Length: 211
Length: 271
Image 1 (cartoon, one colour):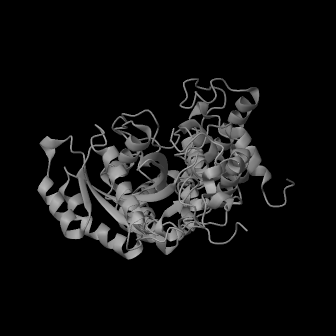
Image 2: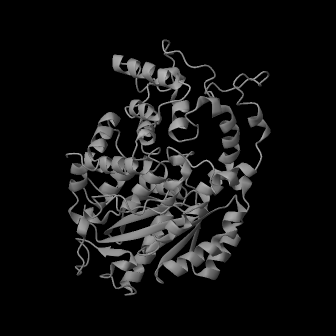
Image 3: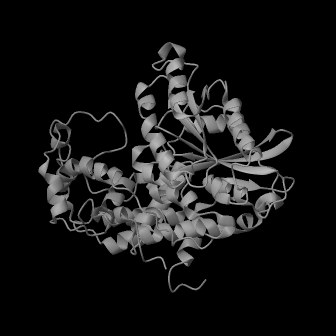
């Protein structure tokens, strides 16, 4: 399936905040209350449309456990977007955001777009981090912010898509050299012809949608 | 090519057939005393052991098992609802072997490598023997178990804390459309394939892993290679996305055939 651009994403954050569930909700439109612990990395992909252009999102969902941290770090390089996730019902996952950001700043390219997501916003009665605190942290660190729920799907599409819209806007503004794949962006068939034409545009399998 | 850079944790003494029982690591683990629950559990004839609530026997077989009976209500009946004559024979051979005062490990390995027909619930005991968790002298089992149970906690902590380094030499398909083996083989190796297959199939794979004379690591890598070989046509036809999804959600397969292919990959074996 052809695409104008391919964006690579990484999903990061503490263990148990719902990274894999956000991915599953976005790619498969379903919620799995009991999910296997992610070991290493899980992969997902989906096509979206921005500005009438097909964009393929290639998403790397990482393990949040501390013992996998060094492996997780190896996935920052070559990501155009990051979803940094915390759990609004567990204060410590919010407190750890700074250390995740530090990893991202150190290992990702400087122009990576970061979306901060306060997940599990359906659990309002157990909330331990206010929306304002999330907003404040995002503002201080130059992140986009949304609260979302992988369970109800609230804001899940929006989070992935508005991250892509931001990356797309940066491309239009000429922030990236899109021929350099280390920015996590690939130009495909049907996009602006570039030196790096889409390698897997010739996919024989039906589509980038996961199933 | 497989020999170098085996993940360090796979070299732990627990994996070898004859763990050096007297080395420092062993002594270090022993130093922490046993928890009260382990104190009486290992007596060959526990006088007043509290009833164990769960059916899977935590303890060693107390009597030399008798060869004849086989209990049809075994755990893995979804795999083999009825035993073939060959399995029945293998099971009675295993039971005979287990009943010896000194168990012949070579013979035990040979019998186990084809899978343990676990009608008599002998798998736990056989795995302990293969892992060197129990010595082949039955007379020492009770005292060994007391020691080992207190070591377990510390071993587990070590295993989880030490970062696992991935042997990226294993995969022959590593250049297919830039699918790095780390993307899928990390989990295969870290969890010894337990997340890739159902429970019954995982048991069968572990029978083979633990019984192989070349050790679990070599066998595991051969099985990983066999997994790739079995789906090579789909891999060669697929793009990056479909290949990665395929590898991270390995399709259900005939485990006996998989293990057969893996065995064919042995160095020196034709094919």
